[in-house]
Amino acid sequence: MFLMSRLGQASGSVAIGSCFLLLGAGFGTVMVTATAVVVRQASTHTAGVADGLQQTAMNIGPTLGVAAATMLMTAFAARGPGGGAGPGGGPYGNGPYGDDHAFTSTMGPTLTALAGVAAIGMALALRLPGRARTAAVSNTDEAPSPAPAGQPTP
Image (cartoon, rainbow, N blue to C red; front, side, top):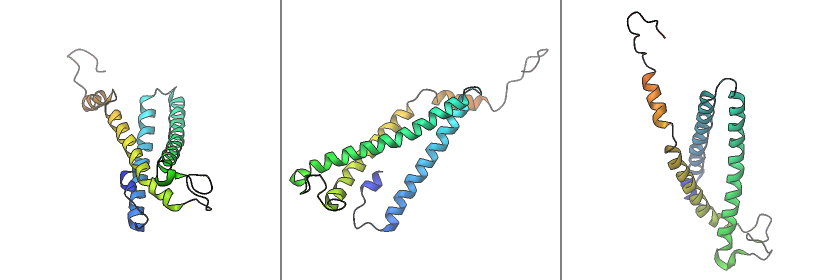
């Protein structure tokens, strides 16, 4: 998102495509990892419910993200030169798609703000409980300790 915030109207298709490639790779990685973690941590009789809740969260997240981006773009456009209201009364002018300059001038600040939200989310995710426990469990899963003499093995 941060790299996308630095794109402008003169940006070439390679730069734009590279940004979308990184965004798609990150999104795909998050979706696959989140699904694997949720299903692995759920018991067999609650796996379906856990996966359903995870899928619901994956659908609500982008919806809220689009709403936040729209709100930020409108707020940045309203604070822009001339108060943001074009001749048609809207913040983007009265053309078929509004004033292109007002739209593109708000993209950088909006995407920067959204990149900041993503960075805060990543920092909070790194502090979630269970990360150390998961690492400790994976280290102990390598080889079970031998049972004492005369005792059955687990």
